[in-house]
Image 1 (spheres, helix red, strand yellow):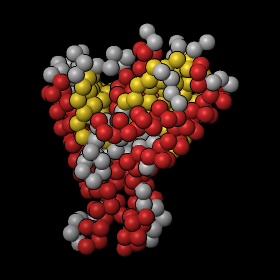
Image 2 (cartoon, helix red, strand yellow):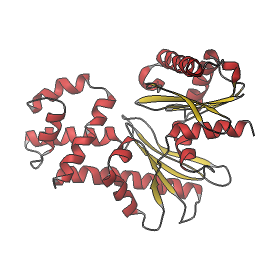
Image 3 (cartoon, rainbow, N blue to C red):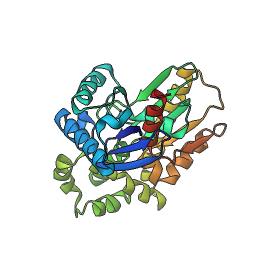
Image 4 (cartoon, rainbow, N blue to C red):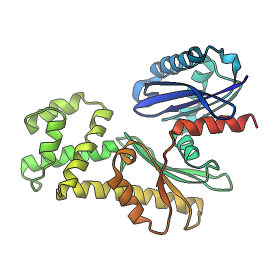
Length: 299
C-alpha cells in the first residue's frame, strides 16, 4: 500500500499527516512553528524531522512506503528561501515525488480543489494569494510584521498596544482597550508594557487581537476603528490580487487563518465589502490541501 505526506507549517504551529492515496488521513502530528524566518533553519530541520518520524511510527511504516509529499510552509514564497528549505527537506528524507510550496497555496487548495480563486489569510501574519485558470499566481502582502502583515492578528494586537499608550499620554480618547489588554497579559499599569513588549513573541502580540475584538464588541470606538482599518487593508489586497489575475467579478474569495476562524465579525466585515462575491471561510484544515497536491503528483 502507498501513502502520501502532507505538512502545513504556519507561523504558530505545524501539522503533519499521512494519508492513503484516496486522501483519508491515517496519522496526524502537531508540532511548533516551521517558519524559518522566525525559528531559524536548524529548528525547522529538527521539527520537520521529528514530525516525519512520529507520523511513520504512528502507523508502523517506513519512508519508502510514501509515494508523494507536499509541504506547505510559511516563509518559502521567495526563490532563495524556497531553495534553502528544499535542500533541508532533502536532508531529512522525502519521497521522490515532492512539492515544496507556501502555506497559502495549500490553504487555497483545501478550500477549492481546482485551486482557482483568491485566498486571504489573517493569522499571526497576513497575505493574499490567488491563482487563475491559466496557471498564473500572485501574492499580495506577506512581507512580515516589520514591513507589512496588515490585517493580521499581530497588526491588530500591535495597534491595540499603541492605542493604550497613546491614551495614557493623553494623545487619544479614552478606550476600554486598556482594561482588556492589561487583563489578558496580567499587568496592572500601562508603563509595565515596555518590559512586556521587549520580551513578547509575535504570537503573544498577535493574541492581543482577542482583546481588541472584545473591546470593539462593547462599542469602543477606538477598537472598532482598529478592526475597520485592518479589514480595509485586507480588502485592498484582495482587490489587488483580483485585478492582477484578471479574475471575473463573481470569482470566489476564501478566508483562512486564526483571526477569521475565531472572529465571525471580521468575516462579516469582509463579506460586506464584497456584496457581489461569494466570500467564505475555509472549513477544512490547510493540511488537507497539502494532501490534495500530493495526490496530483501520482495521477
